[in-house]
Length: 264
Image (cartoon, rainbow, N blue to C red; front, side, top):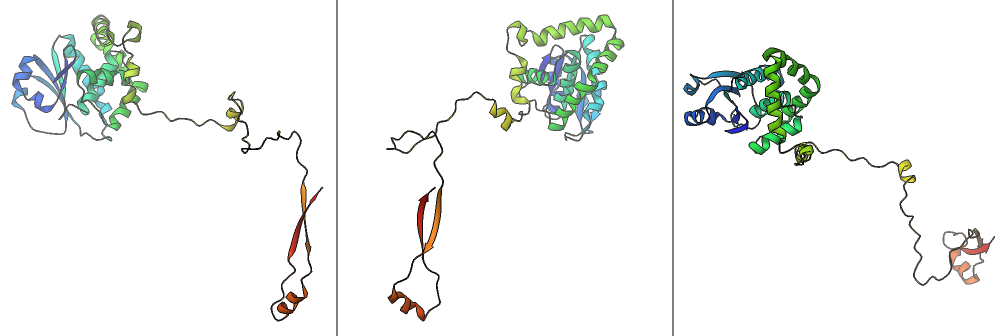
C-alpha cells in the first residue's frame, strides 16, 4: 500500500488482508471497492465501508463518491488512517481517492491523477471512471464540498483543507517554482485534435511566395505579357495515285490531315 496524503492509503486486496501492513500503518478504517463477497477476519476490528462494484466502464462509481468522501474525511479528521483498496489498487480504488482529492484538496482531475501516480505509479482508472470524474468535477463537486463543510463544521473543515492544500501543492504548484501539474499530467489526458487551416486563413498568411522554376538552360527573361494564342487548322492532303489504286479495294479512309500552326 502507498500513502497518498497523510492518513490516506491506497492499495490492493492483498494489502488490505495483510495484518502486518495494517498494523504497521495503523489502519483503522477501510474502504473496500470490489465485487467479491468473501469475509476477511483481518477486518473484524476495523471500521469498513464496503462498496459492491465491478471494474467496468459502465459501472456507476460516481454514485458512491458522497459516501466515500464522508467516510474518509471523517476518519482523517480524527487523525485515523484510512486504506482504500480494490483488487489491484489500480482502477476502482484510485478513482475513489481521486474524487476525494478533487473535493477536499481542490485539485483538478488531471492534477489528482498525476499526484497519485507519483505515490503509486500503477494507478490507472478505466475510461468510464475517468469520464465520470470529469463529469463530477463539472457538476457535483462544489456542492459536495459545501455539504462536507457544513457536516463537519467550518472550523475543522477549513483547517484540514489548508493543511491538505499545502501538502499537495508544496512541490508542484507553478507559483512555487516547481513543476506544473498540468504539464506533468499531459500524458494522462487524451490528445487534442489538430485543426487544418482553412483556405481563407491561408490567404492571409505572410509566408514567402514560391517562385516558378524554369528549365535549365532557359536564359530568356520571363514574359511580361501573355503569349498569343496559336490556332490549329487541319486540311486534307491529296494522296498519290499509287496509294489511291491500293486503297480502292479496301475500306475507304478519310484523307490524312496535316496540322499547320498559324499565329494569330
